Length: 263
Length: 264
Image (cartoon, rainbow over all chains, first blue to last red; front, side, top):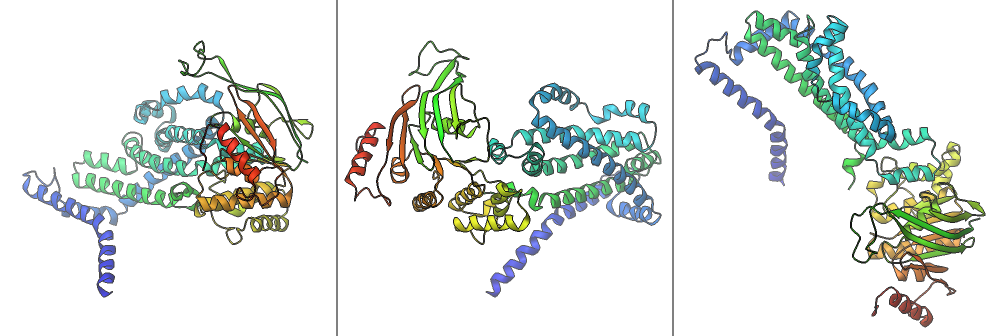
């Protein structure tokens, strides 16, 4: 029994270690390339240089300030998109005529990259947070509307029969059938769109604002500090990882997981 | 009270096939009406347990859905206790072929749907009562996915009974259950009917189920579908094919009618 216990401990430990192994390999390759590529450390800084400069940026508070600025914009834009997009998606899913009216419009707007809106966003909202928030809103809003509509449309018709059979009011049907039925899909959609909005915020900050991780990268490029550029990229990746983990927590809630656990 | 009167009921569907099936009228075009149910006349008295038999696709389920108010008829009348059916109602509850339990609600929440207007204590008492009736005490906080197929059917039955409906409509209530669970459920439905004395309509394609359970068996057949046979079953319960030669003869007759020559 001792051996099986040890085996369990080993498999458990390796399950935690394997993800870090990938990062470790990346670091090794990066260091190797930086040393032997022949490029100067200004053009291709190695991991040690980048780590040292990250220490500097952390110490003087710039990194925290820019990360908070970016997260603020993503949070506001994303919440706005969810607060508007999910109810609109539900309405479109329930009303067939409204859907045939509005769906083509949404499908027309959806493939237009939020970045194509940058000129208009700057003209309409000026400089600062509003245009960046607007762009994030656009990037999450359409996917959320579409996923919610599809989720409502895909609800098993039997559940509506049951609701009618038990004399559910319209309000009860929405609260006790539609909302719980679509929760798993909507959580998945939220998980996808939060990544998209994080992607877009960096691009938006390169143009319209004087803060945020996107601005940090652009500003460092102008100063020819590639180590700072890489610091910005690393933080973006780490925050992305954290956002996904957060959303995954949401997905494991009881309300969101009735489908995945069904046999 | 659960008295049902069906008069000259017709149901037609728009044809969605471009080419007619080989056994259909070759003149049939897309968009033409196809008559599925034709001139169905039935009178079902209060407390009767009626089993509907018929080949698959003949419209048994459609007939039940019309009675339940989920679908409109194309012609004729359906009256329950003298009033025309217009839409679903908690007075006639439909028990679905595949689980109609809400998977996001616990068993207690599901069973409580029909009594949600009652106050907390009263509601809990009713839920407990009906769960006890289907022997699901202790599973209040379970989700449907955590129950076996048979337990899910019983939970749905409890939910239907808890509203105290006049009529219970069951669409193939035992399909997909293993043999023993099927037998037990059948027994339970018979006992439940003896106990609550409600009108129960059951669609099945299992002839034995119909003969063991029904106060009456209605066979649908023909094209378009009409009532091919309507027979009261005045055999004492519990019924047994071996002990009742008459029931056994009727069984062979029905099998022959449905196209099976050597029923075992």
